[in-house]
Image 1 (cartoon, helix red, strand yellow):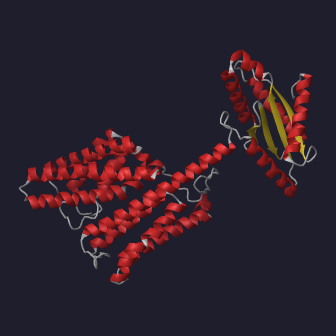
Image 2 (cartoon, helix red, strand yellow):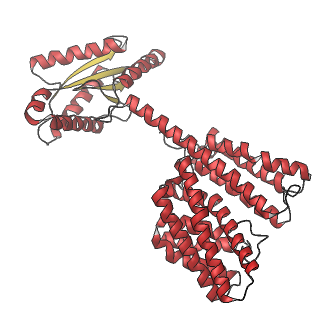
Image 3 (cartoon, helix red, strand yellow):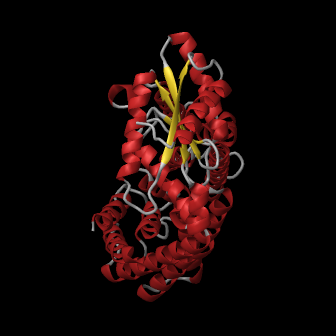
Length: 462
């Protein structure tokens, strides 16, 4: 219910901003923001948002003095346009996730322009023709005005609403893909990353004022409107992502509306009509959203490839490559700081027998259970890795031999606490740097020697 309330409130607020209704003021309506709220609501809430969209649309049209009967008809058209467009976007462009890939952004734009905006325009023609005698030319002008305003808003405002709804938390102090927790308190607002975000916001406002303010001459204003937005949007797309880029687009659109209503058209030397302004906005906005989505998609692919390169696919633990690189880094750190570290090596007992008697699926599930037991018994700072087929390793920063033996006992207790059949039995070996070696291979060999010595004696690490 809270989401439906937000849709109604958002549509009423957007309608009450003083924006002209497109078919009442065809030459003044750069966009119609309630349409963007309606589409975003339909995408986030599904068809059940229809009632909220209807209420918000009726209230918005009534606010602008439209008769209740006409307002209800227009509101029904708003519901049909937004719900139908949202359904197609869900089917063809991944719904609210449409802005994660460039191709889906273009599909979203096509569905919005061809389906949603066209249905809205047809509704305007139907309502105006049925409620008052209007000339054909006036109907055509009203329909085109609605189509342009609806398309502009849904392409430039709705993406920001959708993306902020998906991820409402502001985390300027953390890079995308960074697994560390976000900064808190004052640090979150003064961090280097946050300062760059503030700079982006200030430059966005400065560019908007330069284009639509009274200070530049007509040729310079035209040049600024053509050239200035793209570097700004590219900065946002490359450094932050689709959500922040959509926000910058919204700021530029708000500045455009503000300037247009004050009689400022940067494209007046070329073409003084509103359509040129809307085309420029749509061109810059779509280019920026496609660029941001493509960069985000590439970053996600790089992260996934890196994760596959350092992760064991069965258990989700680090693999041998990640383990050896981490040991090498820990060796360098220890030589600089003097902090000790140890290595714990585990080998599953009788895994071959389990595989032969119970099947390889049971053996694989046993390895996964062992990985879960290691996660539950080890510290957050420990690196757990699958060293080989049935061998696991735990890198223990800050541990001497005594602490490593205590950790081995905790692991053994976690294995014994697992009541699932077959039971997990493992032999363990410990190596300490630098006593047992000064390279990763030497430490692994020393722990392996102790492990097999214990396995040969038929005993377990206590």
